[in-house]
Amino acid sequence: MAFELKTTVPWGRTLSEYKSMFSLTEAELKKRIISFGDGPASFNSEMTEDNKSVTSVDPVYQFTAKELEQRIAEVKDMVIEQTRNNQDNFVWKQIKSVEELEQVRLNAMQAFIKDFSKGKAAGRYVFHALPDKTAFEDLSFDLAISSHFLILYAQLGLDFHITSITEMLRLANEVRIFPILDLDAKKTELLEQLITHFNSNFKVSIEKVDYEFQKGGNEMLRIKRD
Image (cartoon, rainbow, N blue to C red; front, side, top):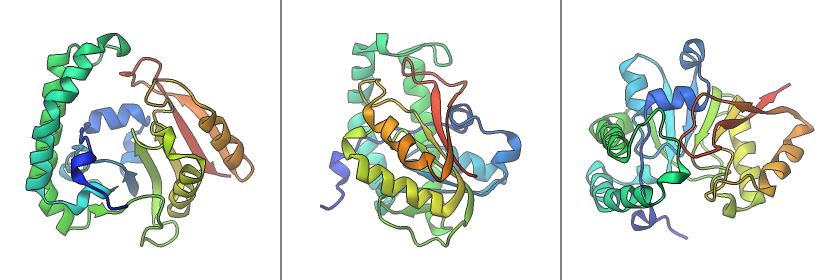
């Protein structure tokens, strides 16, 4: 099935949030990072401004900056309204209000839009959809991360997740996934199945992180080569 822009809800996060979500140290930020499901995050543009390297991978990168900007404009009010109607599901600590959330997200997405065409030409934004294999060679990166995609969309199924994470582990020595809750803010059977599957050949752990916006969403899954 073709990936359609009209079915996506682009929503971008910042470098600061990525640091907290994945417990990224300054030393780790200097490593070769590949990030899956970034969408319109400002992570890549901010990293590039800091002279650091990250490759962002997402199926939405098949579209133009103008198309993505239009889609963001179409969905932002709906997302903010849904958040406003479900405020009790979130922790208003790092971000203090719905109004601040809207501004943070819009700033991040505007930074992405401004950087996208240039970054795509430079190979920093790569159009690709998991679980298909990427064109990168084995261990081309030090760290592979996934923000608000894998595990969150548990309905994609176990096989999808195993194949996707296996591809990420082909590319990097370590994988980090945040959050480990599904869309209903619950830990699912999928998480335990993934831990069981990868535990035999890799070091698997669940680790607390400093970031929590979705209530209870303050842990990441970490999978490392032994």
